[in-house]
Image 1 (spheres, rainbow, N blue to C red):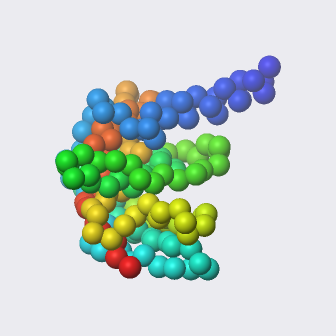
Image 2 (image 1 turned 120 degrees about the vertical axis):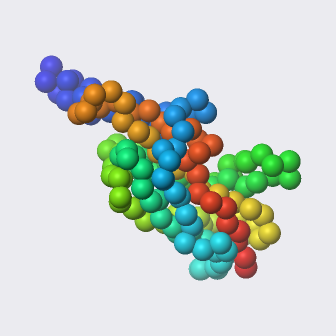
Length: 169
């Protein structure tokens, strides 16, 4: 019976934070003072071993008065469509493991690096194209409940995104 409890205890925090990975359009807004900034406005598309790749880097800076939490493997890259809407064009393939959300305390920063690479033949279109506008989305959340509680509420997916960037070949 003890192993069932341990298994349930390990899964429960994951289930409480899981909505952040999917994005919650009705969650709280990004706390004032949090900025998600790419390290440059244009990232080069490189070719390595016959495949295209791009590395998008930047910083999540928390100058708010609340700790925010960054979920492992919940990044996406979205392209701005001609009508102004955002469409996800890339998301990671991640192992089915639980990694506790990483806190970013007030006054702290966390660097990010999102690696997009083409794993199939070059006949499949690379998801990032020059002249299009992109942004990185993150699984971010804030803690809810009294201090020490395990509850998280995902930040609205429309607000847990970086400033925009483009790519070039």
